[in-house]
Each structure stands twice: as C-alpha cells, then as structure tokens.
Length: 243
Ligand SMILES: *Cc1c(COP(=O)(O)O)cnc(C)c1O
Image (cartoon, rainbow, N blue to C red; front, top):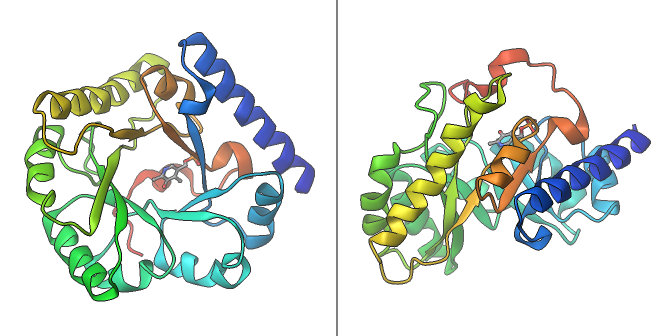
C-alpha cells in the first residue's frame, strides 16, 4: 500500500535520526539502502518517488526482472546476496557495488570480468561476525590477510565491510556481532595498509538498526520495516538457500 510505504519510510528515517542523536553521530554519516528482495517494482517506485536512491538486491534473477522498470531512474543498485561465480557477468550489468565479496575465487572472477569491460567496481567485504553457519562471510580473523591479497586488483575499490548481525529478540545479544565488525575494521586500520583508511561499515537491518548505528554503522539495509513481511519466517536468514 502506497501510504504504508511512505509512512514506514518516515518512521525508519526517524529511527535513524534518533539513533544518531543518542549516539552523538551525524545523521549524514549513516545512509539508507532499501533491501528490495521480493518487493515489486511498483512498490520500489513509491520509495524512489519519496526520495530514496539506493537499492540492494540478493538475486541476479530479481535484478534482471526488475531492470526494465528501474533502469532509467536516478538510483544506484548494490548486490547484497551470496554471489555465485558463474553469475558475476550478469550481476555486473546491473550494479555499481557488491557488498558480499567473501572469497578469493570471487575476487578473481570479478577482476577478470571487470578488466574485460574496462571498468571498476565498489566492493564491501562480507564478514561472518555471528559465526552462524547459515551465513556467508569471512571469519573476522581472516579479513586483514584477504584485503592484503585483493589490494592488487585495481578493478576493485574496497569501500568497507558488511555483516548480517546475529538476530535475536534480546537486544544485548545482537550487539557483539555488530561491535565485532567495527573491531575488525580497527584492526585493519592498525595494520596501516596503504590506501585503506576509509572503510564504511554496512550493518543494521529492521531489527537492529539502532544498535548498528550506536556501534558505528554507515549504511543500514532495511527491507521489512519499509515494505512489510516477506512471509518467509525464519529461513530468510539462511543464506545457503539455493538461488
Ligand atoms: C533482506 C536483507 C536485509 C534487510 O533485512 P530486513 O530485516 O528485512 O530489514 C539486509 N541485508 C541483507 C543482506 C538482506 O538480505
């Protein structure tokens, strides 16, 4: 419903603003990405008309299906789902950033394809800070050496780190995985790698956006609180479900 989406968007911006205020941060330091998996182009359009410009999709198929409706709009699309190497070429047709870079073989394939196309791509490195098997991402202790390995790829612009935090009904159970992403970034900074000194943190979803902002998030990714439930129950957070 149009009114609902507009109302929900206002609520989310209000929550972001409140969270920034109570943690002494600038509202302009935290951006909103709309997580639009399963959301129709018509509903996405409502959010865009309300001023949103950043979308994230999890599946190549959805990027492709929604592309005719979205391709001429002034928006930016990121890929936020698990990316299979054989889908790289297709996904690159639609996005300017991949937030789920989690392995060397994927970096290699991205570089190969980007070189062919003569372009660069922004990437976030996905980190598994909740240590759940249902999620992808590098273990926090491996992120530093991963960055040292992929730094040589001139096609990949390392923008930051991404995590899907541990979701729980108890707030304080969600905090450690968010804090760990920030700590991982601090350890990378401490290693003083040339050119790696401005890493964004992509973390915070419908349930944990306040905590994520308190823990230093620069980019929150919201689906449910804006577009409503996706009716998938618990299994939405199993990233292993086949595409
Ligand atoms: C679906 C999704 C989100 C948004 O989650 P909500 O709980 O619906 O706000 C954020 N990040 C990723 C990677 C997602 O797949």
